[in-house]
Length: 122
Image (cartoon, rainbow, N blue to C red; front, side, top):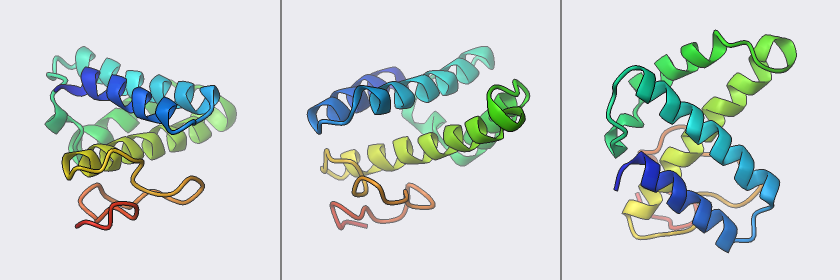
């Protein structure tokens, strides 16, 4: 599985869990932006490409676009939040839990390496 497959899989799980179309679309938009960043830099879209170094560099790349309100500050925060959520989701999935890594409405873990709230595995 690569990050393209991972994005599709995440969409499938979000849909299965009954997340709204707007939520699904938001995740997909920002996951695709990260994939776009990787492609522009000729970085293979492998699972290990979703790491702190690439996400920080992708955030800088994203901020240069200044899309949205407050020169893109809100969009940049949402972009980073989405990448953290996606990484945590993939970490939980790798441990055998196919649910979101935390209950709806709560905050994502600071890193994907932390234990999942839902699957309670570390």
